[in-house]
Image (cartoon, rainbow, N blue to C red):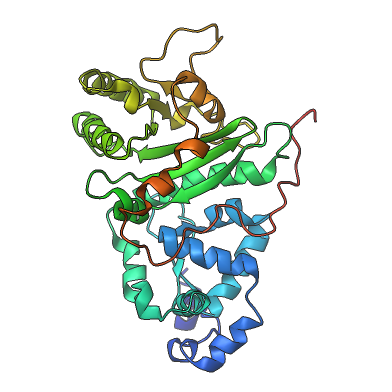
Length: 355
């Protein structure tokens, strides 16, 4: 208002009194962090190193009981320079805060594994560069896929079905293991009472042509031929309309494969999820296998834990063990993959309705 004088300092963003960049690299600061960082904090640092960026909502889903506790702890980690943060521009509303590994956090990770920070290949400017990367939305989308599964694992009591995420590899780790043949967006394992389903994830944002999306099956067929392991490929698409088009393109390519059973395929669309559900996630009954045989099921779609039934010849993850099959061929990664669930995570504060 013209009648009100606004002073410049009132327009400045509040700057918390955190640790300076120079102080964060000192031995004294590293010693102080030893008394401050919990096992969950260190697990979160490893997760950020593995997956590059996580939003505040994803961090809450993966490790905290509420948004308030997540924001409070993330602010402390930010002030200690264990993590860094940025907030992307959004035309409508405001985006959640995005977190990456900070310099002090990288030093803690390196020290835990007897390494120097340079051995991790970490540089703060490179970590923050994801803020302007054109694949930021894609990377965050893959994080949404898995953190919603982790939230389901934490929220619901594992009895009687014992569901949960047991592995989550980043795209960069997949590239080191399988990059000469194919680079999945992620590799995961979903555990149930009857076993584990391992899978490769192709997360589609709608930016690629369906022809390009479907031709990825050729690379997965070469990988299956090389490893001797049939690993399902799950395509997660933004809309059911996009899914219908993708299934037509995938069916044409899949039918031309020499061994179609070596590349099991299933698709799902994000808009099929029920937003009113207690904890909607890709574990719900949203997956439609490609060329699935007719059955007595009331719905053609499967829950994630049921997908193995659509492929009776599929070996269980426990017997195929893709880790061991590729260990000798893979380029050594700097750090082992962090467990998807935080340490000492109680499966849950909320039981399923009616339990």
